Image (cartoon, rainbow, N blue to C red; front, side, top):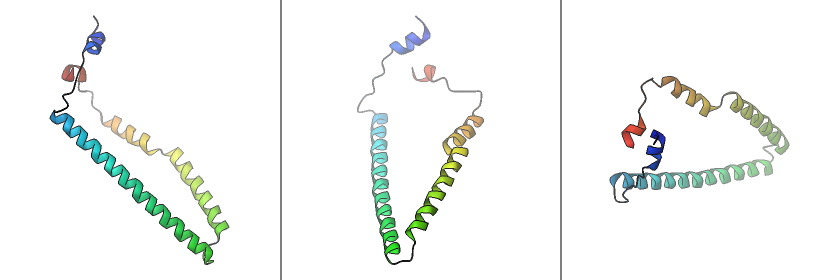
Length: 111
């Protein structure tokens, strides 16, 4: 039996009452709560921004056509910037450059 077959044949059941499981459940609940709060905050911010824009356009303080042209131009610039400098890739490269040759052997540690 190969090493990979031996590892694959092992079953690892997590006790639902274990501290790790409880911590994981609490962490997942916290992340869910934070993501829902972020969605609500984003919805409030978006509605406030749109109400402000409508008010400025109706009062004549903002030219809707010029605003739309400016928004389109800035959006294109931002998309070009993101293509040139993707943040996730930059972070991955920075982290991978810091990795050392000594890596944790997870198969022997946890399996």
